[in-house]
Image (cartoon, rainbow, N blue to C red):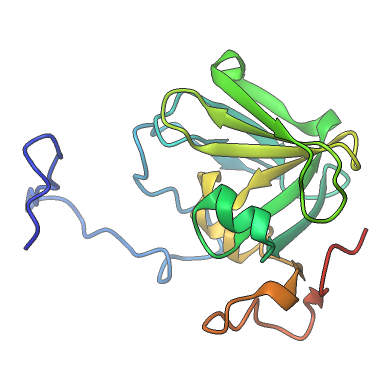
Length: 194
């Protein structure tokens, strides 16, 4: 067993709590907001939900249906690999008219660059300045829209229901051990469709 040091808080089994339901086994017909990070005030009510950074300093509210919700997708591009420190990213597009800051807008730090693989146009990434969670990206070529990160959504069931990826891009760059988003109804593109 690895010793991570005394600074790591260990989970304790109190014995009197109900067992935690896994994300996979949770009832998909209602919200499932597990303890994930410090914040515990995320919500999903009707057609609105929240996305919160790991430390809880930044929280956004967004619609879970149109016209505010534009699309949800997985991207396998090399930019997303580096940006997320993973082999792909999962995100959803929100029309900015419908995006609300619950708290922490001043806690966001921006990093911009114009070397993105597709367009060489400016991409700006917004991170929590405390914990480093990437909350969203803004693409110069898609004004008025933000690309929120699916992993920041507080109701984990939304990733399997309303926010389940409908599109997969840069499949030409997908790693061989990831079969991609399952389903015949998923739109797939070798690069960015726009």
